[in-house]
Length: 553
Image 1 (spheres, rainbow, N blue to C red):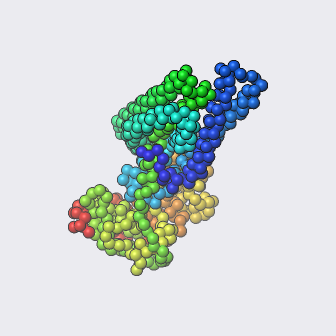
Image 2 (image 1 turned 180 degrees about the vertical axis):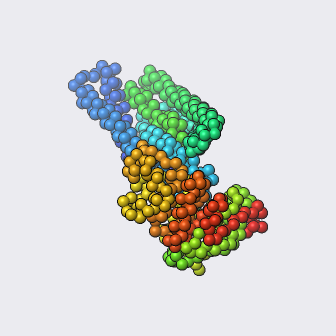
Image 3 (image 1 turned 90 degrees about the horizontal axis):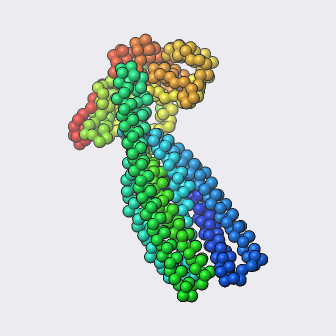
């Protein structure tokens, strides 16, 4: 775990301006610390010699007040800038992680990475605020205040400077030793938080089903156990942080005491003047303070650093490059062909689908079927251009899919997933079309969504999502089918459209598919149920192979 990761400047541009300000403010703060120390010593030392008067010291007293106020103001400004910069950096990193996760595609997300993205973009990256507000300012003070003030101490008293130089390495040494422990505890804490978030999301998603079968107590206990484990991990991290703080305080106090005793003994013998001794004694803690604070705040911000490191790993994951530029042909007359397409399942010696050869004629309903894990969804992901085929190719007419412009290709497709998502907004916002249009009335009757609208308190103006009501999976499915009917896309892909529906709702799906076919659209259905196969003009059977990669490909 690095104190400062240069990737922050690469992925969060707001970091660059903040670092420049930190350097400038650090230099100003160093000057103010030196001035404050000099003024205090200059005011106090004449008092001991008996030649101090109020009129002679009044100017320095006023200057001391000004310096003190200025130092307080600079410290406040530094903290305020830190808070604002932290918010900008966190927002920028969140946006980048979410966008890149989308570029990495469903296959990458399905490997358990979804929960990691959710954790990072909610609680995880929030811990970076401590890093920016408390740790980075002190880190940059070690590069400005510590060496400059140490030079000042050495100039005024070489022996004291030598003592500090000999003791200084002990601070980073203890930081490294304890930091290794903290890094491990912080990583375990973040993993515990991700497991807790994953279990909680799974529990909430299946709560209705678990409640219906009376099995909700087991998962609830599991979430409670994970919460307890997370609390223990947090306390362990705090324990190490307190241990680190105590060790750093001990070294700082010991160094200051050694310098003070040395100065005191040499002042008695007259080898050091009172003014010089006061300056050195007051500057010694200021020389050590940035390093001590870096050690203390490093542990307080370690959780944020660990989260940022996870975010960087996501951002550095390479998405599937689809660099084609060819324009998409007219899909109303262009067939789609799978030519010996095979995809090696990641982390397994399984090819799913294996050697898929099939043709999807334009304007027809094609059902893709096969046992669970055979590669039905993977075949569709290859067709969407989200993942590459390990061997073989997909042809759009005479053009390879990889030669097409991906955005243009996506513009010809509407995809209805098994669990359609809703966005925060009204039902009309989620539809994306003015509900007063006559075509919408026809579409909602066809999908059965008109019956859903009739049950909502404010009809199309009912708020959904955060602060509003929710829709069941079946209701969201009908909304997604309505959107598919209203879209101009020539190709409509339905992923298990009847998986969460009863027999009556399944009839609406069948009617919608038949209507899409009557419009001349190409409908591709991933299905298990025979009712969907009965609608098909053609059926593609997808199989997997457990042979080795070399044998299969």
